[in-house]
Length: 282
Image (cartoon, rainbow, N blue to C red; front, side, top):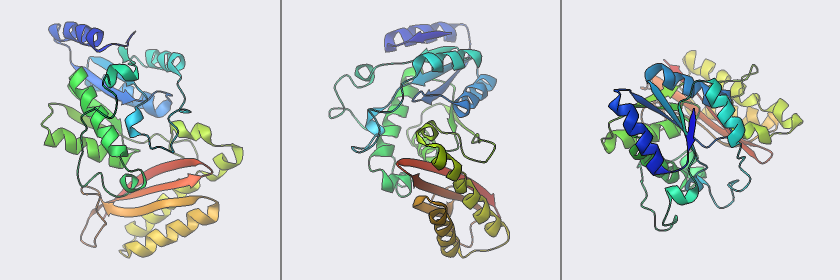
């Protein structure tokens, strides 16, 4: 496995793979990898001959009060995990390689509608940062496939739409959420939880399961289900940001006619913001 930091070297290496007729997969990450990320790498390896994992802590998707400076940079450990998973190439550029003119002068990608609401409402500008850097990475690597986790359901919807709207020739593959044994979705930010907070955190998944059961049993009073879940999260010691039942395709509030639903949740536990989702067919 090789690690490169420059776009020029990345393109030189990938040009060689293409001459050999090999297909290329991309897994964009911000590093601080865990089992969920590694599952994406393995899934990419099943669909492509060469797997490129990018490690870049993207300043454009962090708000002014968010944890950009304290976000863990664990490149050596990330490299060990990736090599063990069969990753081919690590692209770990510095900020100046991605944004040579700075963030203010950078052209940005805005994906309308699916970026609105949910995390888009709570984190203004976040999905603009995500969409911009993902578009850049897709242009830099020009992969045949790209793999993203379903844990951030809204992010995946944003990426699918930008690829479709900008006619980028890549297949976007969603990979299932990887969970701890108690149901907590694996996330880099779980490392911020102290012991007592970690014991509370599985309440997020329990609220999703309880709401999914209610939907599966035929309830269509979505607002009431959302309120019940929010109350349960608060009672468990979390501070709910949102708990929304939406149409799985549009991410707009669910209606009684919708058959494919997704429950989206974000909640704070101490200073840590947890997100998760669960889809339901009716």
